[in-house]
Image (cartoon, rainbow, N blue to C red; front, side, top):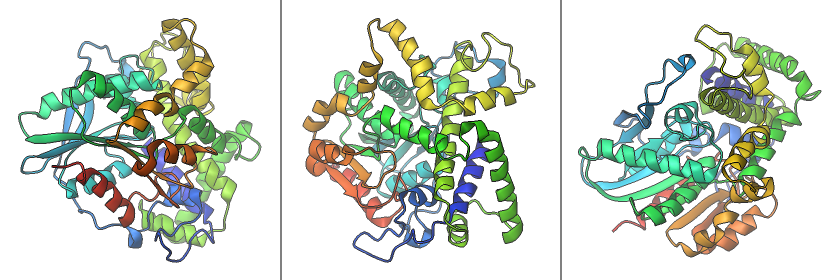
Length: 429
């Protein structure tokens, strides 16, 4: 996965969207192309000043100690989370990662620095769609149903608090998440209203999908619609991508996994917008493929792997990987997730489930709950027409919409950092 992610980011580099930058304006974020912003994020000269290093410790949580872990996942040893603690009593903020991301993904590291610098203990959680979470912490081992995922996250938060409780002094609890983690934070907050285990003082949804189904449909299509020749040409296209990576390395003489490197290459290569979209779609597809593979194995197979197959560490996974790469999140929804939920809830229709997987489903709660805010970008590529208007109407003054940034591309920009910090600081005593 690491290699594939690296590849996807390198590929983003290739698109080189000339004209995608603009000069200083009221909101001094420089990238005007939302797809470029999503890939490049915030160039170093525009980033907020954040700590270079953090006093991070890792904790492993055994949520289901009696669960049998298949041999193929021999390296799994509980769900890892990270804790960054202040030296004194302080509020603790939980951060939920976006689709397929671990607790230590690059965006998570940026958010950890933001909130540690603002005086919080910071506890970071992998996405329920990450393989580690599916295997170790998901009760159904088939993520995607927001209410189930919220229950799983809530259980992990409680176990994490038990694990660290004697070691830190916590004054209050706060909650945030980005992308999929943003919409999950809303459902976790609502769950906490019933259970009252944390009593979150404030909750911030960062670039959440308004409708999960619509957003994953958009992301699936970024790959399906932008590979020349369609998905049937996927392998040929991927081979060309690998060749391009090799050419770039040979021309520049080095590779560096950093935003600045991507920025420099971005300025050097001609604009290839369909390619850029396909690469973003590929990155999402890799995340969803890992989720689908782990869910299928943990539930005994039968979807993309044979039923009860003996898959060991020496088994070639290439055939399954190719099937997974051709399986979109929307395929998983229709062919795997919905049938499972229908067995639990006879009479549940696909339309009803799609409606439940959205902020609309809890719109009344969001309108009435002053402690919850939302931060988004007007040009976010995962949103559909009308979503920004709905967020403004639902959250009112608790909605902060930035004009640029694509999907989470501006999280390290000073104005965005200041907004996140101010939002939570206003909840402190």
